[in-house]
Length: 350
Length: 271
View 1: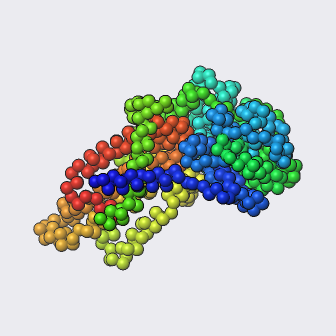
View 2 (view 1 turned 120 degrees about the vertical axis):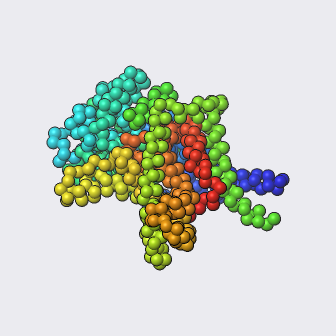
View 3 (view 1 turned 90 degrees about the horizontal axis):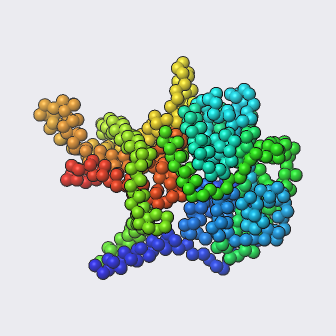
């Protein structure tokens, strides 16, 4: 009997070791980097390791929420992470990031002034985060199916393209569309406004072909849908695949998003972290990443060197006036979050 | 004595990947944000929206299981009647798709069923109008049946091929026609296989969420989707755990109900 208890105990310890104990080798300089999937040219990591001798352990996640879950489970102590504005805001507020002197970066000035300013919405004084890529959310539509040029969210709600439109299968991106169409802020905490958006989305649901995330673009490309709410980066690739597609940021405004890098509180080797951030800002590396991802880059040195056709592409380099009414997502209070979650379930259950 | 040590890796496996996760989920199901004890998460399965999703999942899982049984029996009978070398090949053909990732296969179904997809192309060639199957519960059902059918065919086939030919001949000698042979001999003798099949189809069909997301176009909400939302979107692990535990209890009850009369038989013959 005793032996069995001992054995079980041993097994538990071993299992715990397997689950949590990923010990690290202290001899070699390493950086544990956490990023979205497909969000960096793999070659960039190889080049970095070659040039600096610092070993990069690279981890990926799909959504900011998944990232936060993985990060806060503490299973892996990440040194650097790249995530979206509202999640960075949360991480900063919860003390998970450490301040980093952005002026110490040799190539930091490649990042345009506008983007530092945008980042200040959630990182006053630019103390924590380095802009990486940004973009908008808008409507990708098929010109052969939609005769009039689209300039407003209205086209998603007037029933004209019933059964042929695709919404984003994500809570805030869906409510953002309705809130902006109604003329409200996408960061509103006013329950009445959010409920008004809910009523609009419930009314719209029978017209919605599907709520998708990654496949939204593909459905428009394949001609299965007339239009979809997509991220600008997706829209650019969609236009590459199908020349009949057009992307527009509706005049009522939309979400503008900014993904940035931050140094976590677990990072001891800030020197290595700095080298990595600097590396990402370097023009040739930023260009490599841009050509891998094709989202809008805040790196002005890259924009200057783009081909004429890319530089004038409004999807990649939007006009300032086009994004005037756009807002960043800000972190909501728990009550509003809960309201959103409940309403979303209600919308899906209908 | 020595044999115990051979069991150690399995013990590690069971403790690390079954017991510990279950305890973690159990603990977080019974607590709230502040770590206080609560029943609320477990009882939230009774909320109208959660209950509706649970019942809908149940309906889909039952439908999927029934269709799988209806398809598996003829297939298993055909397999039984094949000569040995052909039989191996036929089984291989049935298992072959399982060597590919199931999400890829579901994505393939999305393309087959989509408005401009293969199916509508063929139907269009026959002169009929486009079918609107994609993003509906019908698409979900097709995908689920396709995905889980091998898990029904294999145990049913195993059970049927174990039936001694003499038993069937004896039944015929005693005057049973084909129908009587099937209902009175083959079906009862293959019941354990069917029960394994039911477990292996019903449980995943009941708890899956990816098929609903992809083929249901995000418009269909199964209980699995709600649990997924609680974990990944709402980040309310307590509610998600509570729902998982309730679902587990619900599945256990359904299975106990299914297996009530069967435990005295051979037990489980999954493969």
